[in-house]
View 1: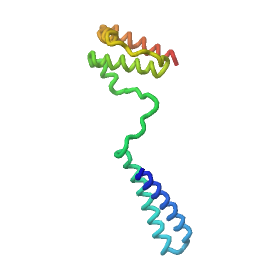
View 2 (view 1 turned 30 degrees about the vertical axis):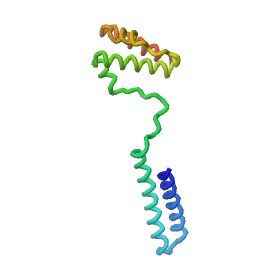
View 3 (view 1 turned 180 degrees about the horizontal axis):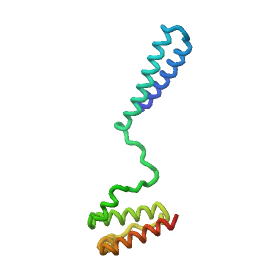
View 4 (view 1 turned 90 degrees about the vertical axis):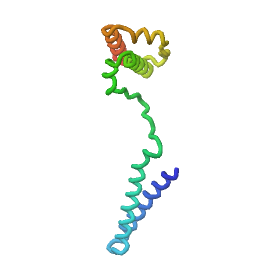
Length: 135
């Protein structure tokens, strides 16, 4: 709250100082200091805005962003990687065509994770095709 107030005070000061500098016209004794105050206050406002990430978390995005870097590694990551893939597909299903999809029971998850490699890849392909077809 204090930071927001400080930031807007700097913006307001910069605007007022710029108006004073412009209104001073050729009176450099007023115009130059006013311009310096305007630039300084504007700089402080920008600096304060750039520092906000360290003070408070930014809002999380409203839409789901799929992790693209780790997915390829999950295919070679054994049972934990496979579990991540299945859970990601379930999450995509819930956020897309099937919002009422129930939570997968641990036994069913274990059954899918323990499929042979070829069958697991066919399972993933079928789930992806179903997701893409629902668009």
